[in-house]
Length: 264
Picture 1 (cartoon, rainbow, N blue to C red):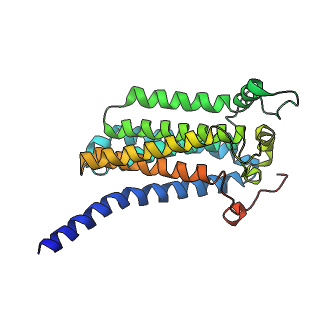
Picture 2 (picture 1 turned 180 degrees about the vertical axis):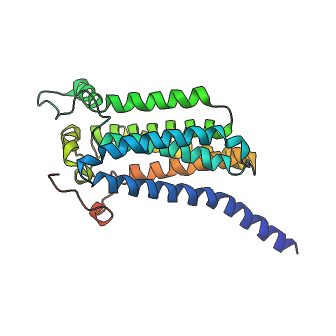
Picture 3 (picture 1 turned 90 degrees about the horizontal axis):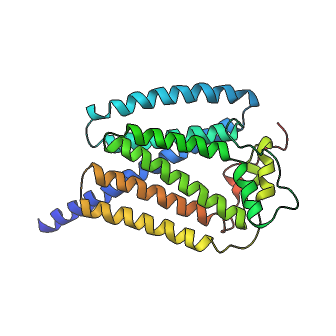
């Protein structure tokens, strides 16, 4: 009987960790797939981005206002999904060319060092400002754990993205230029191909430490909404670590996503 109770406890604990993991992976895969599909549509779909953005904002505003009516078990998943959806809309607007930056062109041939970093920042400045505005809006309206988790999710995604961007700017062996739509192919001029860079290992360690910290705190808190939120953030951080590893580990990228043609 004691063995059965212990086995049941172990299974419950494992499922408590795997449930958030499955949710994160499925949501990430669905949103990534949607972005890739929309990215391959004709340029006229930019209007779809605007319309969907308004719909998403309206939906999320009502969703976050009504989260208190849901059970505490559902709230972390709704807050996490809200953060992911807001970030995905910004990514869609970037790839559509609606939110990029004041420099939509290739890197000047004479640009090196800090000037190279400066020009690279100008390629997506408006995108970052829009994300900052969204994060500020979430911070102002946060009134419960769900809206707070939406903000943390958005900030984690922003940090993950910029860590990957900086690694690509400094140099990595795997650069998927074929995934960029033709209108953004100029971004490849800012990238550098090299075996590795001094920032890669620290960024990887930071991701691993954040993942471990989220999981450790979730284990300390035990069952409940706060631990579920930490598990969701931890698994998202683990995905970021995997994506960073794919920057240096050889793998056939076209096996998952065929390259886009050179012209629209």
